[in-house]
Length: 425
Image (tube, rainbow, N blue to C red):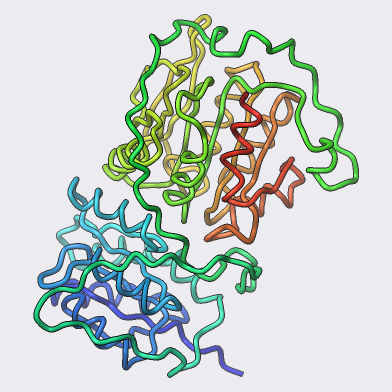
């Protein structure tokens, strides 16, 4: 029996770019571009009549832009996966981050190449892993979805921020990496900005005075990882590390929102993103969670009360300077196909930091972070939390850590923040 193609609609107001996106998408095996639209309003009209699995959606368009279109698709076509296609600008970066928190599965950036063939090649390199993963899940039967209420012709429809239904079924893909898309829209928390005490000048004071000398974790036995720890950890971490990829921005918002501001230990995050977009992500996380989240700079002190986010397109690592831990940025080769890479940060912490570490692996494609967790575990002073299969947008990175026997607890997205807070008290 022939597997049906992944049916894709390309939405972009530029004729030339619609052609580039189509040719790049159809170069991925199992993908068929079934229609086009020059703006969001046209796309929504066609979605009511044409069975589509994925929409490749431009951000900036006349009449109805990408964000407003995404709101309608999320509300009325929850079976359709949306991947944003964005130009690289600060304005677009802000919008893309909002789209990722409003239901977009992922995003790709438009290449800056002048040559059309090189542009198609660069776009294909970005689209291939996303569309290949999506093509492995079940297709919708044509005609399955009922058309939504018609849009008012006189004005763009108001954004609909209807939460997606709670996830209760296991992933439907053959590899177990991908669940049905959609996660709850995150309303602004309207918290007052946090205040922070004068930063400490050494790493030692960042730990609670009650922390005792670290003792090695017991050897892992044949029981499940969570059970082997008897429901807890006998150390207080001195550093929090988080790695995430596809679905990560929304997951990070949920996790950090559940952690009280003024985190008593330093925290560092690696989210797979290209340059420019991490500045917007850090600002969005700060606004919506009440934490002081900043894009990490070079030679910056790692200190309590501040969450450092790896800059897009650069590896983030750490190096000890006496009693102080400082950041190191570099443009080295990609690791696991990523820059920044979770493994780079985690392995540098293993080499430079001797106190207990809490490592968290969230939703994402691939295996980045697994070797880093493995290295940290050798010290006997690392506890690892992974996001549960059911709550992941893509159950890839956490799955690999689980299968390697490195996860101490697999926890749902809704409970991760409170668990981190409990361990960091």
